[in-house]
Structures are given as structure tokens and as C-alpha cells.
Amino acid sequence: MRILVTGGAGFIGSHFVRTTRGASVTVLDRLTYAADPANLQGVPHDFVEGDVCDAGLLAEVVPGHDLVVHFAAESHVDRSIRGSAEFVRTNVLGTEALMRACLEAGVPRVVHVSTDEVYGTIDTGSWTEESPLAPRSPYAASKAGSDMIAAAYAITHGLPVSITRCGNNYGPRQFPEKVIPLFVTNLLEGAKVPLYGDGGNVRDWIHVDDHCRAIRLVAEHGVPGEVYNVAGTAELTNLELTERLLTAVGAGWEMVERVPDRKGHDRRYSLDDAKLRALGYRPLTSFGTGLAETVRWYEDNPSWWKPKRAR
Image (cartoon, rainbow, N blue to C red; front, top):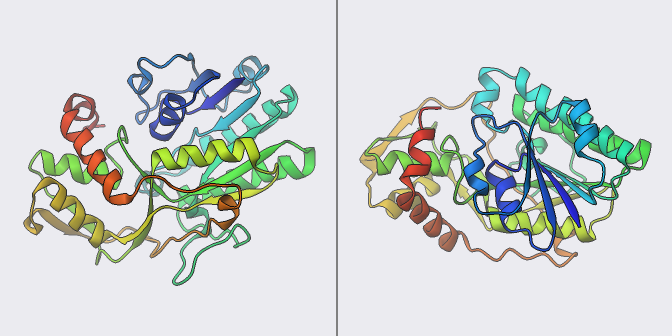
């Protein structure tokens, strides 16, 4: 089996590649600030440096693959608030270019990896796959646009693409702009951690290994044209998450700095993943175990994250 992984040098994409067995894997990655070829060190794969928006390159790379898994995306909300053009370009136009290339190449299976943020914010209950899209940040809007492009290719052209929507990922090798590695690396260097607003925003946390297993399951057994939510194992307020991180590194609340809330900050995310569980999915990594292992990895690998802190 031949698999093409876009964004395969990033956090989630590289974990997918590292844990894929019995397949020939090609990675396509533009190597932006959040990607690192070292994430794939020692893993058999073919690497193509390039832009998912490059239709000419895609026409050369995509044909011959049995599965395309589309991770490539700009993904940091704060960066999207400061400037959204690159998010629209990569997430929307890049997805369109890739879907067209897959269609023209006759790829038999495509998985488009998305986010729970496309649903917006929810006070109570959990979103199902039928919940309306109501994105509230430029990042979320660009991902919602990419989802609709993928869905349109399934409906209009019959492209065998499924969409996955997942909560907040965590684990080793996550770029230290995201909250868990940011807080951990700050604390390891004796710096304070910035806590937005009142800290009451709720996120649903999933270990990257569970997410990647869910993607494989959808690739193997999901219905083309369908969306599958991938829920996590812990819904926590940012305050609760901060407390756990402080405890994990032996720090106190004096290391927390309250900062003004993010613009348009979504209050709560929550996914219903009954549809995925009907395919046989179950998360395997508890949040307590996964968080402890993640903190330990950052403690043991400063040479990986220290050069990235200034980017």
C-alpha cells in the first residue's frame, strides 16, 4: 500500500507516519516554522519538500498512491488573528488543489483531517457530525472552508474522501506555541505561563496516538463522503489544565500570569463521537498517563524544543 501524507513533518502528521506499519509512505511538506524533518528521523519514508497549493507538483506526486491523508494546514488561532491570509491560502486553496489532484489521479481513498473548532462554541451538550458549522476565528473559518471543499468534491465528483474532526491534541514533538508544550517549556526554563482571561474556557484533550488510530480506522472502514468526530478523554477548563501542568513540573501558582483574553475566544468545545465508536474506536491513552509521559518527553528533550522557542 502506498500512502501520501501531506504535512507529514508536523506534529500530528509525523506521528501518523512514525506509527504506520506495512506501507510505503511519501511525505509532502513545505517545512514551515512548525514542521521539522527531525520528527521523521529513523522512519522509512520518501520526502518531497513542497507546497500543497502547487498544482503542478501535486500532479507529479499524487498519482500511484492508494491513500492520501491530508494534515497540511496552518493551525494556530493566535497567528490567524494576527494575520489570516496564509490560513486561507493553505487551508482552503491548498485543500482544493489537493482534492482536484486526487480526483484527477483516481486516488481510491482520501482522509481530510479537520478540527472541532469549525463548530464554534457550545454551552452544554456535545456536537454531532450533523451540527452546523459556526466558526468564530479566522483559523476555524479557514478549516470550515476546507471541510466544505472536501465535502463538495465528494458530492459533486464522487471523490472517496472522508473528514475527521478532532479536539485538542497533545503529546511529544508538539511545537511549543500550543498551550501544553508552551506551558511546560516555560516552566522548565523558570518563566511564567500566560493564562487567558478567567481560565474558564473548556477544551477536549486527546493524545496524538489515539487521534492517529482514529484516522486509520476512518481510512479503512469509514464511509466516503461522511464526517467522523474524534472525541478526547478529558474535558478541562484552562484553569484545571494549568493546575495539572504546575503539579507535573513541581511549580506553584506564582508562575501563572493572567493576560487579557483572546479575541473571540470560544468558551467550550465538546464532541460526540458515537459514529466513530460504532466503527470500533476506543481511546487507549488516559489523560493522566498521556500528560505525564508528554511532560517527561519535554524534560528529556530540550535540544528539540529550545531552538524552536524563538520562532
